[in-house]
Image (cartoon, rainbow, N blue to C red; front, top):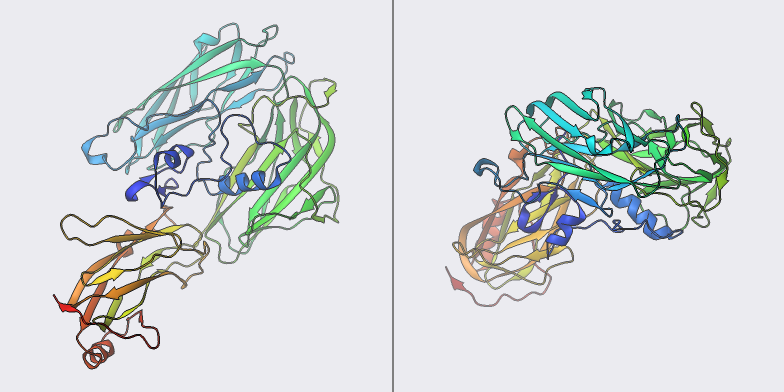
Length: 536
């Protein structure tokens, strides 16, 4: 079972990566998503901001968009003692947003994102969720998920099991306004749930307000599992306009991680990798001139990606907008034209130039691709042997002992052994306060690059001064991956390794000790002169 993407938050606590966590933490190592949306949609055509938004989205396992009205439920509830270091074991993520006034009896439904989640270390059993939309009587009608039984506007939904650390990205709830209900009408869906073994969910609600406009959303499979490394992956794409107005044209931006997911086709109505594209992206910006009336559409061809030969997991994002915008110069495609085809009847509505989009909740879809390979950062034991008074650098490393490339971020917590003093820290590192018992200082670093092949290492070099004569002073190097799944960091036992420091009075003793410690990663600059130290 896949566990949720986690980021190492304040003082090493794991938490989901959202703008909530970023705002809460006043210091590193939290890395907040650039361009995270607060309130209105990004100004277009702000290419760099939009690309940064895509980049940060694809780093999120659960694609939690920080939009206006978003509520991440249950984040501050008290925890049982056994789960004091976790988020509440059962919670929902739900949003307030707009739905279109009716475009006719056969108008399309809008997808409503309601995500039940368990952050517990064990699977939730016999899960029952209640969706109470009775406040929508006379306002809207609902299409309930397949695992729900409804009586009127109240539905009971059931799962035999919700896996440990699992979030259901597409709950399957759909809604559309009833005819003759005007803009401004609104009501709230109440959401609650229980689990036989983990107790009750933190309840949630989603308020929906009727409005007039275009409402574009993108639908693709959210997970592809068991994909063969080096194979070709076909991704079907559905475009939905669940608004009451027609869009005059559409822009579609597709992004894949490189070299893990490379687009194989170069369609003639797409521009590829425009100036300013983020490094590590294969990006296509496609323009469609078709009228997108309320209804459901599919692309004339699937999007084809080449999966990397050593890929463990990767993701792509597809963003569809009624906004007309240009990314700037890039490489034009030379293949056939990519077009939209209606999948069924559409509502005959005249296109409206510049018609407003109701919200951007469903415009971006993120798909994750998992192969059979694994990645696992293991802490590398470190031995430092030197002469008292020396200044130099020590290397601390994590090795990818998996079978494929590691693409997740990692934090290295380096405990400085007694007898050494750390100097000016490199970028990406910060030092905590001395431990009140051991007096040791711990340095936390988030090294790059993000992609390390199997057998490769990720390392940090710190300046140290050897201040005192010690023999066998010990400390710990800890690897904290920002992603923990059954394929990534599946062996937590190798996340720690010893750091051993021995400081001698003279170079002869140090050389003899170094010969017996081949793992030494201590470097002294040429011409460095030791200063006198004090034995400890």
